[in-house]
Image (cartoon, rainbow, N blue to C red):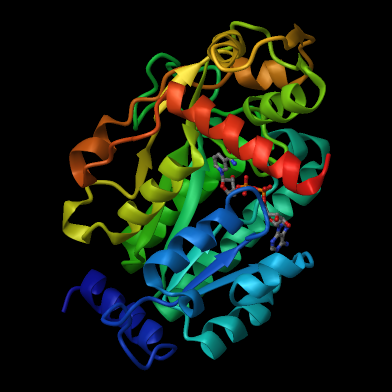
Length: 342
Ligand SMILES: NC(=O)c1ccc[n+]([C@@H]2O[C@H](COP(=O)([O-])OP(=O)(O)OC[C@H]3O[C@@H](n4cnc5c(N)ncnc54)[C@H](O)[C@@H]3O)[C@@H](O)[C@H]2O)c1
């Protein structure tokens, strides 16, 4: 037996010693980390609709609202506590791990040491965990994994990646570590680079947040003060498409995947173009522009994302275009404002 083959066998045996049964023949049991952020709660709803309420466990380090707690299984999970994560995987017989915990681009720049811990040490923990227990692991990456040296219009799947934020650096690290674990240990690592994801839930402190805040502010106050210049073009996607992409990619057979990391997108627009589209349905609001530090971040990111490889390999196709996105957001944000009374 060659050294390479005997090494692979040894790795497989060590994985098996943590897993008595082969997973995936049954409905998968899914754990979502960092689940109380912008994407986690909606993701749990989406996947519970598909796999059953009790098969999707939401987790985070923060206390959930009564509504979220009553919606389905919710547990405490700190991604910096490896033993705690092991216990959860064993106790709940987890098969798939969706790793959402992170400090996003703007927040990460305000606390670099914490971003290093959560985004890099946390990633090490979940990768080891997935390897030990033979989990399928999904880690989202971002347009922020590119930098000023990358081609920006369009940005292909494989190109120069030299990001200038700790968020971007940590995501490139995650992409490379995941690919490495896949090729070295056979780990079923899957990663999508999302553009700005737009939903009516409060965003987590990223550079594309303006495209959510603008709806909340104009519906509440009739005015939005934008922190990016009017002509800043960035790729975007409605949360419905983001979750469908995640779910379809998680289910794609291994044989169809030529990569472990794929770009996905739905559209690209500027703040000025978004406001123009909103004027079609809502008159009488105003918008002003006062660029801050986030402008520098946005200026180093892709303007148009090339997702042709995802379209080719697992038939990715967005459904929500800009017109629909604006209609959905106006409706959903208005409902939230009415329900919360402010
Ligand atoms: N929202 C977007 O537009 C977007 C775009 C591209 C990629 N992503 C990625 O998707 C994922 C989810 O994004 P989001 O917008 O929901 O983020 P978010 O900031 O809204 O939520 C992140 C969650 O991580 C949790 N967290 C922080 N430290 C933790 C720890 N030690 N242990 C466990 N949880 C911890 C936070 O409490 C928070 O609820 C992130 O990895 C992000 O990089 C998001």
